[in-house]
Image 1 (cartoon, rainbow, N blue to C red):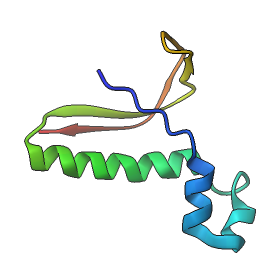
Image 2: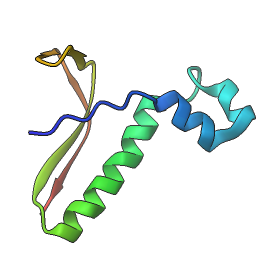
Image 3: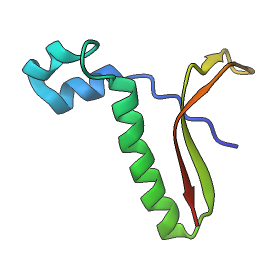
Image 4: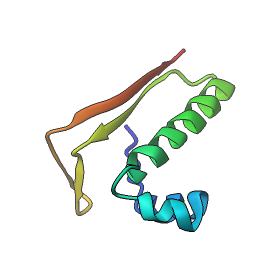
Length: 83
C-alpha cells in the first residue's frame, strides 16, 4: 500500500491562483482537497498508461504520526477504480 501525504498544498495553490486567489485560500477554496483532486487525476492517467489496476482514495481526517502510525478515523472524499 502506498500513502502520499501532500505537505505543501497551500503553497501549490498560491502558485496556481496568484495574489487574488491567495486571499480566498482557507475561506472558499480547500487547498488540500484541490491539490489531491489534481493528483488523483494525474495518478489515474499514469496508472492507466502502465496497465496498473488500483483503488485510489482521497481521504479527510487522516494524520501521519511519525513514521509508524496513521491516526484514524477517515472520511472518503473521492475514490477511483482503475481497470
